[in-house]
Picture 1: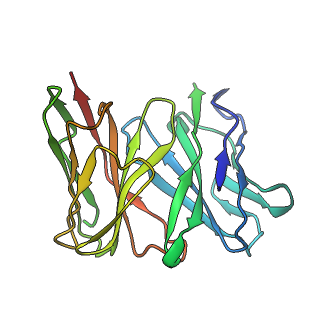
Picture 2: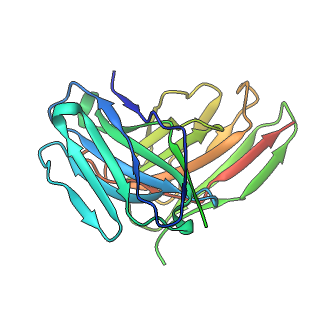
Length: 117
Length: 114
């Protein structure tokens, strides 16, 4: 069965610090997709990024960057110069192939990030 | 504005009562999903639907039921058979069930059963 592990349950940093959220996954599929979502205190999950298994290029979007390494089955997320508005729970997810060609998302348990002023 | 609507935001029910949570999307997405989130936990899939009049059980379907009579709507009923119904319920939609499409989420309904 596919699995996503976010070993860091909670992280607390001071504003302007860099922070990395770890995500390790397990899958037997050769084609799969990885995702990161942000859940602010309001509760709604916000999509951040999708990465397919054939694209190992790192991605940067503003203060956010993602490091995908198939060799270690990791898809880590770094926030540079963190801000209070980054405080949220962050979820890593893996698409899991089903019979009939459909997929479903398997979520990690999330990492709660608190950025203190 | 396109998006997913869930209502109500907070819902209170007495034990033994069925309750229906609504989910509507105007994104023209084919696939829709229901998840349950408990404190400190990730999201667990209850039901999902790829097209109208078709839906599949997820990992924790016992005690829940759904319908998909319209493309835009995917209501979830929490029945009295669900042993621990108090939770945060999230509805999501995507263009399809394959191809790694990202899912878009609604604001959620927090259900409390006493």
